Length: 112
Length: 113
Image 1 (cartoon, rainbow over the protein chains, first blue to last red):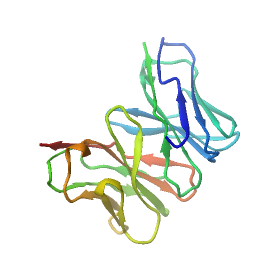
Image 2: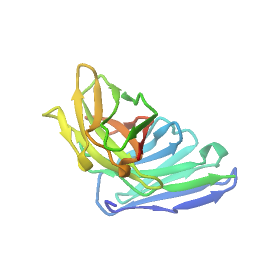
Image 3: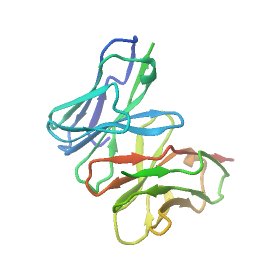
Image 4: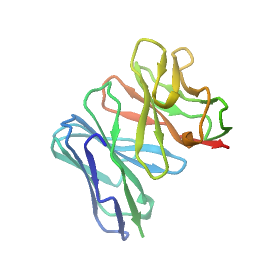
């Protein structure tokens, strides 16, 4: 949908290992976002980007870092995965400040 | 900063009955408001949006929402629900900088045959 691809779709990893999730868009949109979805919490913003190399923290950024070296790619890295980071991760994009977000299909991450 | 409160975590309703899902927001600046729907094991799909102008906004699948600035609310309504409307519904708010976009905790709508 809306030219957004998240990879991988599913991943199981062990506590303490680094993990990188990728979001790729073909829409040339300026803004990109990473959210995590957990029962009872809705979607919580982890990090967002408002241009190449321009990123900022969201409400739950501890333990996560991001990079955006190209317009089309936004990477989310868990430096040392913990069980509390088991979640479904969604990437979203939009082109203008008053546009709605368009979402990818999500990545289900399990940290054992 | 903005925040969004969805007052009901679960709403059961009989088929063909009307439904209202409540959403309140807090913000010190002008905002844009959105409702999204999420079907099981899927991503989020936009239902409708309020940017400016008419306070009554119509969306897909027969849903509509009304922006009430004085009550800082953006409640979602449908006059007659169908089984296929069973899903999770999220209210969201964005400020006019475009830099952040916040969601409520969601309302699970269950339509009972």
